[in-house]
Length: 301
Image 1 (spheres, one colour):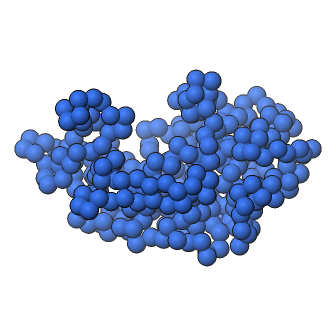
Image 2 (tube, one colour):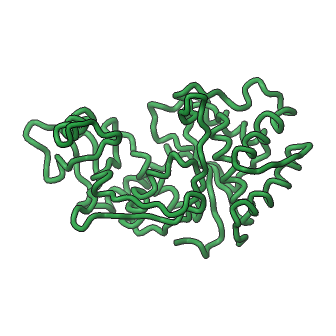
Image 3 (cartoon, rainbow, N blue to C red):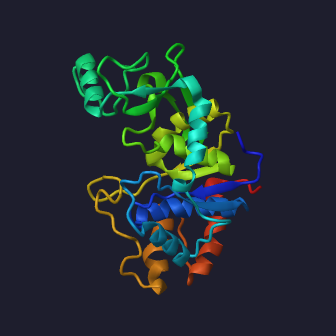
């Protein structure tokens, strides 16, 4: 664990579109936690998934954070400029990595034949673990997860409490480089957090399920384990997580800078459980930081 190191947090949005109110909530929580701990807050653009990137979205994200008075420390980093680090990690993982020729449909069909019903999450059955079948071409790269004994990993989340997952039963060998050639989120985020020395990860609860896979990668790469805090995610009227895919729009679309406090910052803070009043953005952050510290009972470093 990295709890005795000086606090170093980050916000790591994907440039698949502008920031909506849900992503503002995640940005605000990570920013407040860093400032409440008298720590640093980095900005990393996670643009490793080239097919989903939207031209200019990274600059829109940067401008939106600035308009809200959130200033990062140091230089902004882009994942697309860090591929050498991912290649190095791949070499370090060595024989734990193997090529897989299975499609998502084949994995889903294999689960259906074993259980008689379609599982919500695709659990890889290990089809290619001991080599590609005749006539199969490599598509993705997977990381072996121990099967005996089972690999059960967990951590004490600062918001959600203790979480754990049996990777052997609930995930199986997972992808670290995708069939389209892009690096998988799980590998890229672990390598970047390790390389940047991130001590604390504050993000949305939609990523809670990814955490045990990241803990496993940290172990295999010899990286320290950060502390985690997963805040609730904002949902739409249908109960779906607010996202670009569900039609979420930019939180600052059509909102004059003078009205960002009322229409964006105060509602985002309220969602996080902070009942604040402020007459300016600068005052908002002055009152929000100690309020957050009290809410999550942080111990300033």
